[in-house]
Image 1 (cartoon, rainbow, N blue to C red):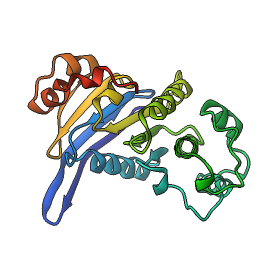
Image 2: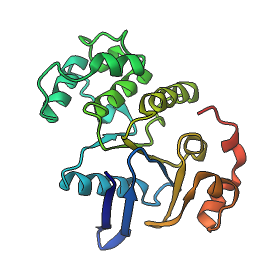
Image 3: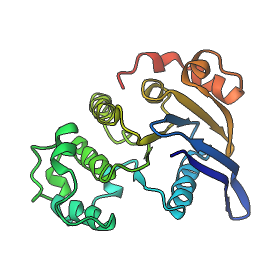
Image 4: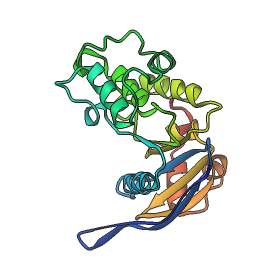
Length: 227
């Protein structure tokens, strides 16, 4: 079912940081939300999540760093149980083996705390938790910025393969055009709290029309990065 939101906005200290924005997201869509720091990307992402959840839709969020999702004093098994409970699932019924195998973290010891796992495995674990229950949409907010480029590329490749053929839509929020270029079919470019360009990825990469999109695509280093 198509996801729709209308008039998303945000004001902080009397200043509009997200102007009224409406979106329509088709099942299985792969969307990149790009723009410079402070353009409003994360604000739009959070507003989108809140609105869709209020509609009763299943939306998962993967933050920038696993530190934002994992309590260093709790075991990985505890985090998994908490995710199941939050979704109203009976403990042990989530497709843990399938997700862990898909994201190549099945060798991890769930009795350990987060610091007992590598950073890459921690972030893959967070992604696995986000995919419990096959959400309508998964929003990834700079999901690999805490990882080195090789690990980041491997993580995104595994996620891509897992989502292939599924109806879960993905929104990738990033300032890294190279990351987005290889992962999404549609790009939305943000500037000053507004989506200023929304078009197929290839069009924005090679035929941008706005100043913000031109500035992003002008840095051709995005063509060479591994992720």
